[in-house]
Image (cartoon, rainbow, N blue to C red; front, top):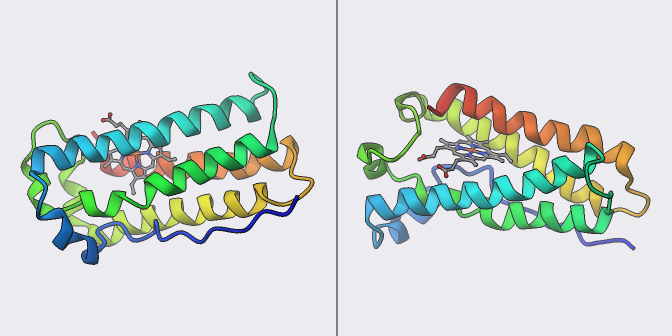
Length: 152
Ligand code: HEC
């Protein structure tokens, strides 16, 4: 079954258009919102990772849905990255991210690209565990690459 490829705009970390709307949120709440999004993303990643490791049965359709879930919440991240959240103690983002927004955004774009590739590939007929392994691996590496540099 050929599934429609969903185009995402998750690359736009620090999306400025969303900033006006984020004005209605308190900085503390934005950090909780952000961390919750990452928790949802983490849960999707856990299931996909378990599938490619063979810990649970491989199911292309389920994996595709997990990737879509990640995209749906991931595209909301941009509106949580308002400068006022920098001073929130509970946040685990390193000052380096604020000081090097280009570098941080590049990691976000790499993540968005890997996720878009996975969404597209997993929606194609014949997508199997052998194809999923490198695609999921690339996605996971994009998480780690950002965490290594920009997360406590
Ligand atoms: C562009 C950078 C970036 C990318 C890409 C990224 N993260 Fe993160 N992640 C962060 C930052 C920054 C935090 C800390 C946020 C905070 O505390 O304000 C974080 C926090 C988290 C947390 C902890 C949330 C909490 O409860 O405090 C999890 C889980 C997580 N990320 C999972 C993932 C997964 C899974 C991926 C990839 C699918 C991913 N992240 C990709 C930057 C990134």
